[in-house]
Figure 1 (cartoon, helix red, strand yellow):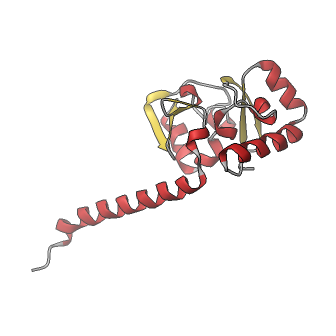
Figure 2: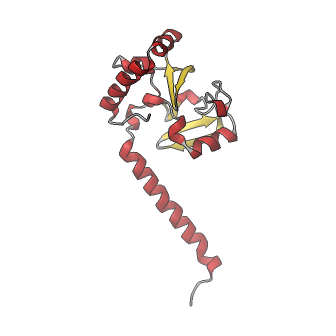
Length: 164
């Protein structure tokens, strides 16, 4: 009459996985406006590893590997190592680029401009990317001021509150 545990456990596990996945996507969908992100075929950072620029990821920009990818909230990220992918999985919000991956300096001026993933600054847990070295240098001269303006414009166009 009753199915043995080993017979129904896989079905229960699959159902729970689907339900948890639906709630995760729903929760992210409520706070993310991916249509405003700087994406190429759904890929963030032009295929560069978002963890690599942080000290724990090696501290320098590295192109990711398509075989080491992860989709987070509708954005596909590539990673240079399994370690970096695991770090990202533990705290994706820490490693995602600010302002949807647009140039932080341009965002502070009210514009969406492409980036060069090799040009970045880290301020706290925020990774800012730039279109040019000049844009990076200008932004770095007054990080707090430019962040404030960029945060305001990003919230205006995306509806998202930038993480701090």
